[in-house]
Length: 252
Image 1 (cartoon, rainbow, N blue to C red):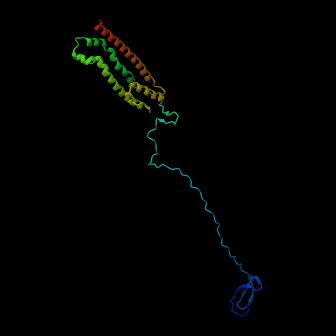
Image 2 (image 1 turned 90 degrees about the vertical axis):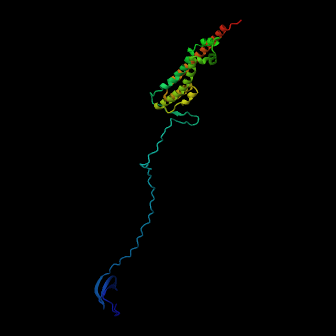
Image 3 (image 1 turned 45 degrees about the horizontal axis):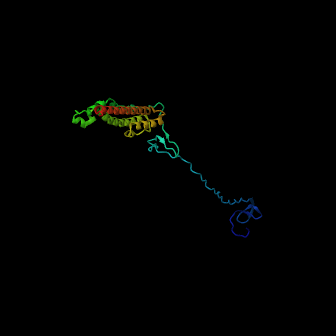
């Protein structure tokens, strides 16, 4: 810097030592020397590493039923579950000790006696003698057995017993429902015969309680006895008719 130019005074790099700086007084170099000011390195830009976002599966949350929407519960549970093809269906059973009899089933068992009983009180022999007598009135001959009270009792009593059997079967089915029997034999089978209803009802009750065959056994036994009694009555009546005919119209 000795070319005479007007260089302002200040610290400048020492021409003789690159690691130092020397004071320039504006005219010439002086003896004042100082270490060169460190040059700050240019920092390279820091690039943050690229991190791939971590994908996490959403946590499973069980569906919650709203408080305003009650859970579905079937209003009716079937009495039995249908079995697959070739299997046997399971029938719901009633609690141990549940009654199997009602007053209505025993009335149905006993009603046939009322229908048959008047026949055994009908004096058919006297009626036959009166019919064959020459003095018999025309009205009596026209009406025939309808003039005998026991015959009328047997005829109309049979229809009354038939109607009562159907009615009692419906009451018996309702009583079984109150006792907790899910399956019940339909009362309409009594239109066919009271014995049919008693047998079917006993089988259905037996499957649900493990017992209940007594009304069926009693009805079958009573039917057999009444059938034998009616057959015997009919045979006796026919013998009486034959004997009376032989007495009133002797063979010449």
